[in-house]
Length: 255
Image (cartoon, rainbow, N blue to C red; front, side, top):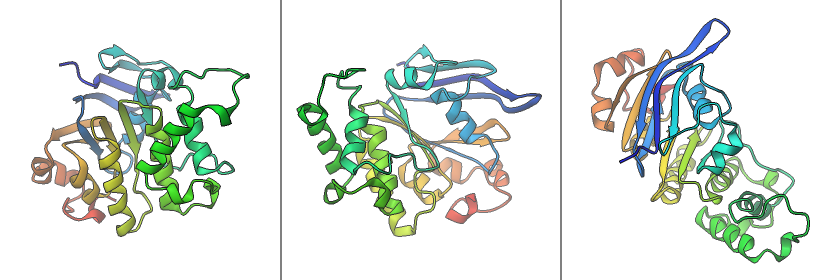
């Protein structure tokens, strides 16, 4: 079966500095895959290479068997991949509903048209309301996104990420800055909204990683040093050494 995502000998240089040093990664369709590693390991750079923000210096990045290396983000998105960011990326002056409606328009076939009245697009309204219910923000439907709590804004961004119907979802530190109860709620949300989809996430909180991931890849100094099940990664000596001797059982160990 063709992998949802496949990276082969991917390298990225900024000037003379090589940040990503020959990454090989396979993510199966329908898998929840976590990418972990110490600060500065190259996790966000890898995400940027997959989603098109950066072009690889060499190597190949494939989405469902199609080489996407060097394509602009909007083309990769239209091929079925969507991502969130470390810093919440929403329209603060639009309502929660309006944010979600914006994110479904292209997937529903509304291109650059100036003759459609948004309020009359029943399919866009219904899809936005479906996602609104899925992320549990029905009670905040008409609230300006900028007035949401931090955890609610993160939930909205996840909603925006999935609203267009992408089959491959990239989440970059989705629980960063959350309390334990907020983080637990976010894990439930991510699990719910990614059923039947492929998920790749960068996450520092090991309780979140072990609660969601089917497999984990460990990135250290721009190289994947291990890919395995959560239990095998937990007991991998080289992985523990990469985290400076701290235990992977404690969330603080990954910071």
